[in-house]
Length: 363
Image 1 (tube, helix red, strand yellow):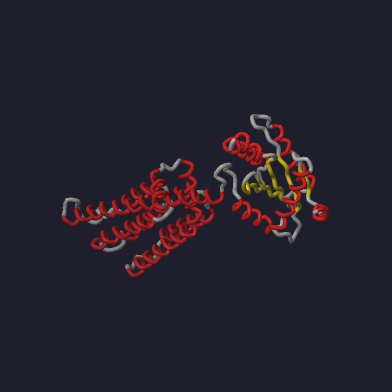
Image 2 (image 1 turned 30 degrees about the vertical axis):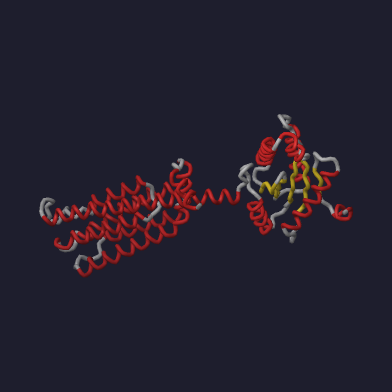
């Protein structure tokens, strides 16, 4: 079963919006790792520069301080970067700076040792970039910049048609191909995993018929709101009047259309609040930041909105509204809203009732 779903997902072409969401999600989750890569890269370059400067007798020049300042500034900018597209550009600037710094440092060692260190530098930079959350254009621009700046045939007295030059070119092609293949495969696998996770989460927390949150999602979000303990919390339970009669008379297809229409009304009129289909013809709304008058106006307007929808198979709704006091559990709020809903249904329907302790006494 899982393999069948996975194969189906892999055949899908991810839309641009999904790809953009994936890139942003990946960058946000990997931003600490990106900072670590930048910091480690600066440390490695600094150690290498110090070794060449002092063991090679060149001294630590003003250029070294300049590169440290530039790399440090780019790392600080990354700390405040929040958009993935900004990181693509920032990564290019960092790679251009550190490869130029590596080139200047390596040019300070004996000519015979330069090709090895240049190839090692290229391999390190390309591998590091291949695991970062960068888009394809940024990755391939990074590859071009790296090979141009750290070209092992430049200033190394090695001709391309000689044995050593041919071996270097062959190795460059091999490394570039391997890193590119690994990068593309990892990106594709991450995108598929993100898409599959998104599909599974939607199935677990979104009602398949009405496409609004389901009971599981509502319980989690409402419980979170309860823990925040913001002022003016109310819970409303909504029930479609005479829904069983609609199903029995017109069939379940018409009943499904009625459920969708009511769900759309709830979704459109309750923006900013937690909503859900609890099951059957029952829906729930969790208000916060409202006083009693505001909550009553909201549910009254919803009743009016559904009532005014006089299309085919028109229906009305009843609503039970309960205030959520500090210390109340979600179960308590649901019970009270259900009691108020029962009173609304048996007191004439097409209206709302605010819960009070008198409802308990009546029972």
